[in-house]
Amino acid sequence: MLLIDFFKAVKKKSAVLFWSFLAITFFQLACTFLKIEVTPFILYGMYSEKIPEQTEFAIAEVEVNDSSLHSPELSDWQADILSTGYENYNNMLQNNRTDIVKTRVEKRYHFLTSSFLYPFLKTRIYNNEADLDNFSKWYHDRFSQFAKIDVRTIRIYSTPVKFDRSVFTFSKQPRKLIATF
Amino acid sequence: MQRFVFAAFSLILLYKLYSSLLISQVGMNPLVYQETDPTYWMFMVLGIPGHMNGTIAIIFDVLLLSSCLASCIFSRQHITAIVFFCCYFIYFVLFNMTAGHHYANVAILVISFAFIFRDDLFGFSIQFCRFAFLFIMCSAAIWKIARGNLFYPPQLEMIMLSHNIGTLVAGDKTIKYQLVKWFILHRNWTHVIWITMIAMEFSFITGFFTRKMDKLLILVYLLFVIGGYLLAGIFAVENLLFLFLLYPSFNFIARQHILPTNKIAPISNSL
Image (cartoon, rainbow over the protein chains, first blue to last red):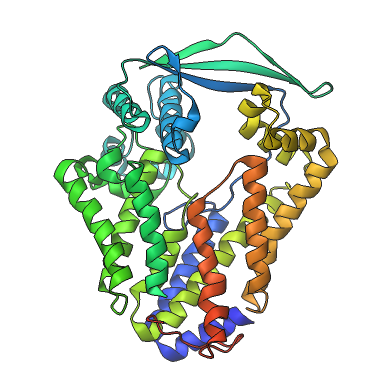
């Protein structure tokens, strides 16, 4: 087997390199089996969770200075930063202005929350309300920078869409304003 | 080899510079996307995101870009490659704190690791990175199989609907619209494509046994990328660099009579 031959050859060449590669391999496998992500030991389970069948979707629409912003004006990376940033902001708002990571950790990881380190850690590793307020300015600045326009207002709308598979039609519901920056 | 790979890295970083995506340009998002990743937590405990602004961020970006360009131009040394690897790791974490995709684009991080070793060890480090790439593909397939996704017909259909909902509602009648519509209306065929894509990912397991299949794996990877783009709109340009680990590093060098096709042998970094 190529992999075993490889490790044998590395061991022959350099013991330090052999043990380094072995340690990296061990950590990657351990993280995968324990389902924990410790960058650079990343989990590659993208799209592996079953997505329940659904017929209702939502389309996000963005209005900048009272006119629609079309995504081709932004690169994929830029659009990702803006949409993920907004989702993170919205998740925190929906979670009573509390970081969703904090809620998750305090619900699931009692070994961590009961440790003596946690009071110190929790002041450092979570987003707080002040960050939530600072986000608006950062979001405005990024929009102006990426779309190359002077941004005065940003409105994000969500349009619910119902999908009827039998006749392949999508019926749009009235859009709702969900955030203003 | 180093010149070729770092030229590709430089192009991607220059595109990011043009798109205002370097740290000094994008600035740190006040609401960081740290998830439950201890590495990201460590960065926050050390206060790195808070300090990465103004002059420090500019110096960091200059160091990142110049170490990449220097590794490309002065390809017979690896000091700048070590500097680049360290800078890129910091950039990777900080950028993902802002952009929120912890694992989507990992090719530069994985491949640049091979270049931090001295010349006589490079042959081993590049092969180790090749195994890492094979593991990424295989484990992606195993995750889907283990979670019972292989025989779950709606999975790809739901991915296609959620990624293309804007196009479908607009009904622009483009080729992409027609293609997605056809697949959504033909669930059995969508499921066949889903199984095929998982099989394509799993086929990378052959690389752990032999390098003879690498040429085929290139084709499989390209088809996988094209399928992912057309059906789900997933296109990670950076990850195409993984192809360096299959073809140019091994079979191409082997053709120059330096590396036996299926034997373990060191490769010089300066090739």
